Length: 338
Image 1 (cartoon, helix red, strand yellow):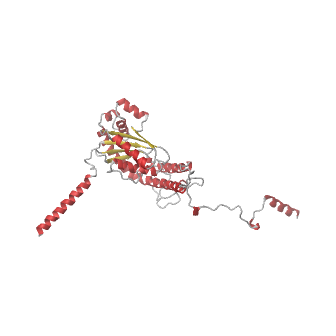
Image 2: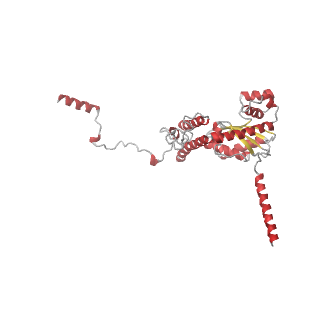
Image 3: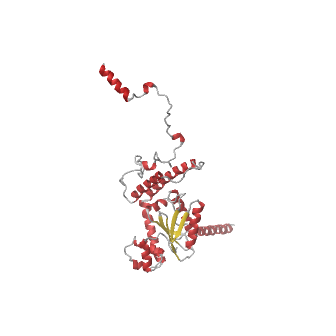
């Protein structure tokens, strides 16, 4: 009997370990996974990904402050690339970088041996936009400037490889362009992958809190605008496009947060700001930027919170009336005569 129970126990243990191994197989192994694909996505926020041969995200890097805000609370490493892009684009939309009613312009740069990856990503992003009723133009080949074009043409390399070289040179001064041109794309990806991990660790330590605060502030403004739009859904003549005031408030939040993330915050980082309510909270966001402007058409104010308008027909007791200038002059003349 004891022998039978022992065999059953061993069988259950083996089954459990096998199941755990299956689950772990779905995650990229940091030591053994090989970088195969480089993908850069530009909206205005710009981000780049390194993935393995199964298109699972091994590393990523936010290329500007806007992108850091978009990914502030996202965990994308270990996800299939298309799923990671869905989350990234949703976050960009929630923050107003992709606006309903306006055409989104998204450019994608791909460097890969997989000749089907470009078309796969283009279709995935177009489907994402279509499902959310957003019109958009998805361009493959990336956002190309004159310097990138010259680098690509001079050394007869792809735009994707040229972009990777430029990314490496922006961090490393021990390489020359000629050195990196001789590298295989996979070797450049390996360098970038290590850089991505270092940059993301720095971001989480130094700027993630500010990026997260900026994200919450921008979402608050967008929710106010959405509340207004919900109120006007039944009005066929209502214009739900973003107003200039809405854009200005979003820009004020982004500009202030960028300054903080660049280390130009007006407050002393060593001071305790956790309980600071005079400057908009722990991260010092300007309350004027967060609160609706009185002339902002996008600022929705619930009816119960609205100030009552003066009643022109209201009767004011005679003793409460302010004397008119003529009446005051008459009173002064009477006093002098007396």
